Image (cartoon, each protein chain N blue to C red):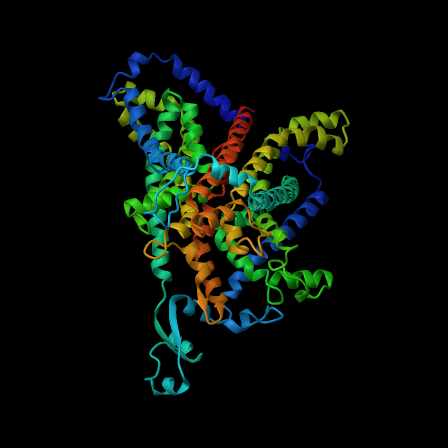
Length: 320
Length: 317
C-alpha cells in the first residue's frame, strides 16, 4: 500500500507541474463543466432517493401520521415522538439487545478472525486456496443464511444440536438454540460469527502483510522474544486495520435486520428484537409512521456519528 | 513477496509451525463449510429424509427437492390418481408416487428472473454513474470533494429499514411499489456509493500522464476519458460491477418491504417455499443451492479484489 501512495503522489506532482493552459484547452467542454456533468447524475440520484426521503422522514417524525390511513388528518406533535421513544422501555430493551449482539459478535469475530489471519500468515502451502474457501460465508445473502440456519439449529433434526451432542454427550433434544430465551441471543451471535469472521480475517491479513519483514529481522537481531515481537510490532501495526474491521462490523451489526429477521424474527418474546426489528414492527406492522420516523432519525444520527469516526479511521489507515 | 519467502529468513515460519497452522486453518474451513455442505445435501433428500431424527448422513439421493422447487402440486385421492392417464414425464411420475399431481409451475423462475433483471439493471446504472463520478473526483478539483465523497458513502451506512419508511411512501405516491423499475432505481442509489468509492481507487491508480499525453496528441478530455482511461480501468470496473451485483442479488430488507409479487426477488421468496406442514426443506435447500452458485463463481473471480470491495477501497492489498 505504501508503494501505491508514493507512486500516485509522484504522478500528482508531475501532473501539477504540467502547464495546464496547454493541455486542458482542447475539447468543447471545459474541465470544470465535465467535472460537474460527471458528478451531477450521481448526486441527483442520491438527492432523489436518499436525501429527499431523509428530509421527509424528519418532517414525519414530528407528526402522528400513519401510512395505513393516508386520509386521516395529520397533526404536528412537536418532539412528542422523540420523547416517547427515549422513555419507551421497549426501545431501551431493543437497544440492549442490539448492544449485546454487536459486542459479542465483534469479540468472537475479532478473536477468531485475528487468530486465523495469524495462522494463514505463516504462508503454509495452499494457504491462498483455504483463504478463499473460508471467505465463502460472508459473500452469501444474510437473509438466506438466516433462513437455512433455522433448519440447522432445530432441536433433534438440526445438524448443530447433533454436532454438539456428538462432542459433549448432551442429549440433542435437551436444548433449542432459537426457542430458548437464554440461548436465542447467542444463536444470532453464532450465525453472525460464522458469517463474518472471514471479514475480520481478511482485513487483519492485509494488516499483517503490510508489516515489512525487516522489522522482524531487526527485532530478531535485538533478541526480542516472539511474545515481545507480537505485542510491540504485530499488534500495533495491525491495529488500524483491526479498528477498521471493528468499526465496519459495528455499523453493520447495529443496523442488522435481514439475518435476525429470518433466524428468530426477534423472538422468542422479544429477546432478540434488535433495533431494526423494532423499527420494522413499529413502521410496517403497527403503522406508527410518525413514531417510527423519529426512531429512524435517532438510528440515523447514531450511525452517522459512527460513520464519521469510520471515515476518519479509514483516512488514517490510508495515510500509512 | 519479498525477502520473507527466502528459506533462511528469520521471519519464515518453521516447518512444524506451518503444519500446525495449516491443520488449524483447514479444521476451521471444514467446520465453517459444514453448514453449506449440509444444505447442498439436503437439496437431494426426500422430505421425510430431510427431517429424519437423527439427521441422515447416508441417504438415497432424490431430485424431489428440485422438482418441488419448480412446481406447485396438489394432493389427490388414490382413486382419482388411478383414473388419470399414465404420467408423461419422469417428474410427473415422481410427484404421483407421493399421491399428488402437478398443478403448475412454481414462481421460482419468475423470481429468479426478477433477481437477474433487477441485479443487472441496477449494476449497469450504478457502474455507469459511478465511473463518471469517480473519474471526476479522481482527476478534477471538485468543490467540496471530501464532503461529497463522505455524503456519498454515508448514504450506504443508513439502516435499510429507516430508509425504507419514506421510500415506501414515495413509491406509493409514484406507483413504483412492486415494480422492477423502482427496485432498480433504489438498488442503483445504494450501489452507486460503493461504485464511486471503489472506482475512484482504481482510477487513482491509472497514471495521469496517459491522458495528458493523449490530450497533447489532440484528444479532447472526453475522448481521452473514453479511449485511454476506460480501457485501463476495465478490471476495476468489472470488479466493481460484481460487487454491485452481489449486493443487489443478496438484498432482502428493501425487497421484502417494497415488493410482494411482480418484482419480488429470490431472498424474500426462498423462505416461503412451503410444502405440506411448513417449509419444504429439500425444496428450500435446492433453491438456496441454485441461488448460491452464482455467488460462488463470483467469489472465485473476485478473490484478488475482495479486500478492496469490502472496505470501500480503503485497503488495497
